[in-house]
Each structure stands twice: as structure tokens, then as C-alpha cells.
Amino acid sequence: MRWSDPLWWTVGNWAGRLLCLGAGQSARIAVFGVSEAGAADLARALAAPDLGAAVRGWPGAFGVVRAVDGRVEVLADAVGTVPVYWTRTATGVVWSTHARALAALAGDGPDPAWLAAYLRDQRVPAARSAFAHVHRVPPGHRLVLTERGASVSPWWSAPAPGPYMGAVARLRTALTGAVRVRTGAGEPVSTDLAGMDSTTLTVLAERYGPVTGITAHPRGVTAGGDLDFARTLTLPQLTRRTFELTGRHLPFAEAELPATDQPPLSAHLWAMFSAQLAAGLPVHLTGDGGDHLFQPAPTHLADLVAHGRLLRAARDAGQWARLRRISPVPLLRDAFARDVAVLAASGAGATAPWLTPGTACHRDPVDRNAAAALTDSLRAAARRAQADTELAASAGVELHNPYHDAAVLDAVLAARSWERVSSTRYKPLLVDAFGDLLPARHRARTTKGTFETSFHTGVRARLPHLLDHCDGHLAALGLIRPERLRAALHRAALGARTPWRALLAVYGAEIWLRAVGNAPAPTWTVLTPARRTP
Image (cartoon, rainbow, N blue to C red; front, side, top):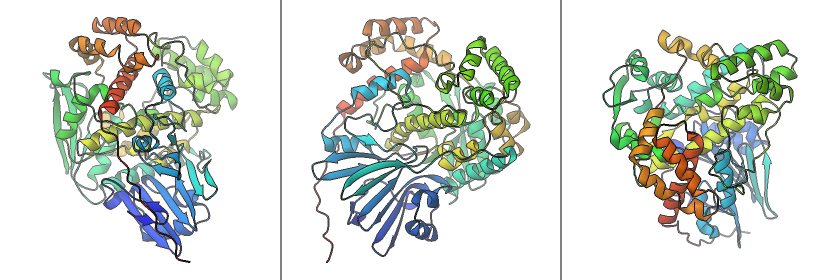
């Protein structure tokens, strides 16, 4: 128990940098997650009239709870890396960083409506959790608890864009801080040494201590792709290590999945993911989120039209379409209609044919600008990655995603949308901020590794197992058509073009439902808070 009035406690490993506590006269504050908050920072935040403004810009990924004179304020970070959930009980509102724990308290299971939205597009409503009657505080919002009840309101808004070079400098400061806060004590960490995003993290982490960079490659492949790029990076405190992928690591390989708060992004790769984590160190940094920040969908076309930059809009639409071998006409039509949501979904493909007509997709609306679309995209990525963080924790590994930090998002949004993307340069904002630290070959890179062939192989190897899943929980809930899903799996096994995003979503959701159903529910003990002394 951390506080007795109001009653607040932690379960599990919240030691060291993961929890900072402060107190004043009749007031308490705690920062949970990864931060550099010191005593002076906590004192300022404790006394600040606007808690959100006081903590905004701190490096790391964290939530904040402040209790003053019976009023409790809980801030969810702007990206959602550290989630905050809440539910109503007979004795009042209870909040937690784990939805499954609150579901056990509320006596409810997975929410079919949430699953329906997830299967359609994975960017589910921000205020809902995967469990019925367990609410989520949307990223960038605060939960306020008083004797009168609970309320949720925003505390974060996107920064106004400014000069491009100012955003470049801001990104360099923010991402460096995001890595420093996780490695500043000099403890050894491991990283994925592969694409530009993870390589940048490796370079930054090596400034503060030993780093083991892990590069995955198929068995028998000793050169090309990520392997060649990894060999060009030489740093005094860097140890390069390769991780050979064998048949045991194929997608969909059978492995017991721990129960998490929602379907994990890596459910289909858990056999590989868990083995790769075991090959690393207890603290591991990934480059997840980099693509969402630096290589987004062409939502900037709507901003260009809104600002009268029609020639630039036409040129960018043509170049973007040519690279993907599609017509630029629909892109320009959507840009002139300011239909950012449709532009954000460009390249996502049609709705999966195995979803039932009743599997409705209820999503939060996206504002008509590229900043809102980018924020929405990163938040969705962070939400899915949080379940992977839970998986890693079950294997004894602290998994961190520095690109999901709120300060990094603020830095990226400080540049105008059409300045932070390019049809001719790969991730220009990231290269301009950190290119001087990367080898020339990395700065010139325009592609990233892909393992799509292994997905077809994995389906062929595990086809009977996958077909068994077609008549599982999702079918019982009326969310999928088993016969159409089986047909899609047979086509994938033959090597046909496959809507992998949709297929992985349905596989992950089915595996997750089984894991949650098989895992013992968290238990609760009734505690009586201490009474205040008159």
C-alpha cells in the first residue's frame, strides 16, 4: 500500500525509476512509468494549478496521480503508452493501469463491441477497453475523482507547428531524452538492430552504456538486408548479435500466450518474439512507432489543399501513387474533400470478407488535419504495443518504445505536415535530426526488411491448427464467417496475395480470447481506508 487516504497501492515491479513519490501538506503526487522526475520536479507539479502543463515535456512515458484535499486527478499520457482504466463499483470508482484486473472486479469479460471494432481496423474507440464496463481514460485526458463522482476531460492538445529546423532540434532533444531516461544509469540494454528507427535508438543508447544490438535473419542467410546494415554500425560499447530464425520461429507457431489487457500485436509471432527477448537483455528497446511518425499515410495532402498549395498536392499525390502503382485521382479527390480519415486508411485494403455484416466499426472521429491523423495512428500503435509490453514482462523483460513518448510526438508535430514527409526522401525528419550520428549507408536507406514469405510458410506449416481456430470464440460471438476465413487461409497457404493485417487481427483476437479464458482471474481483497483525524 502506497497511500491509505485515498486508498492506493501497487502490485508487481514498480521499483526504481518506474515510480516516483512526493508529498506536501495534505497533498500527495506519484509519477508511474519511466521518467526523470526528481524531488524538485514533483514539488513543482504538486503545487501547479495545471498539472498537465507542469509535467508536459518531461522525458519518458508515464502517468501522474495527484491527491489534494479529497480530489484525485489522474493524467493519462498523451500517447497512451501507460494506460489508465477505471470502472464503477458499489463502493465507488476504482482505477488501474490494467483493464483485466478491473474486469475481474466488475465481474465482466471481453467486450464483443470492442472486438468488432478491433477486427475492422484495430484503431478502436479511445474511451473503451477490451473488457465490458471497464473504461479507458483516452490518451491526453485526465480522470478526476471527487465525492460527487468521476469526470474525464482533455489536458493535452497538439502543439502549433513552427519553423522546420526548430522541430528538428526539438526532435533530437526529445528522442535523446527518451533513450536517456531508460539507459541513463548506465545499465546494459539490448536493441533491435535492423531498420533506421531501431538503429537510431542503438546509437543513442550507446552514449549511456553497453548495448547489445540484435539482428534477426532467416537460417542460411548470412548477408543482405538488415545484416549488411547492422555490420556498418561500429560503436565502442556496441556488441552485435544475430538471431537465426528457424522453423520453430515461424509465424503462427504454437506457443502458450499469457493473458493481456487486449490482443497483442505479436500474438502470431510469440514463438519468435519470446525467443528473441531471451537472446537479449532484461531491458530492451524497440523502434516500434517510427513508421507512424516518420512515414505516415498521405494525410498531408489535405493540409496542402487547405493552405492553397495545390501544385505541391498534385505532385505529392502523383509520386505517392506511382510508388504504389495506383491512380492519384482518388487521393486528390479525398484531399480536396478534406477527408483525412480516408487518406489515413490509404493502402489499408478493403474490409476482410470473413467479417460478418453485423461486425460494425464504431470509431472516434478524426479531425480534418494531418496532425490529428498522425496522433491517432501513433496512439493506435502504442495501444497495440502495450500488450506486447505485457508479454515481455511475463518473460522477465522490460520492453520500451521510446518513439511512443509524448515529448517525441510533440516534437514531430512541431513541423508542418508537408515538411515532415517526402516522396523522394526516406523519413526526412528523422534523418535531418540524427543523420550525423548514422553511417552514410543508413542515411541513404529507402527500404526496410520484410518477412512476408515466412508468413505464407507459417500458414502452410500450421494450417490444421489455424483452421481449428475458425470455429472458435469469434465465430461463437457472431463476428466472423468461419467458412470464408478457412478459404482465406487456404489461399494464403498457396501463396496468394493475402490481407495480412486483417488476418493477423482475427488470429490475435482468437488467441487472446483463449488466453484470457484459460488464465485465472485476478483476485481482490477488500481493504478499509484509514479515517481522517478530525
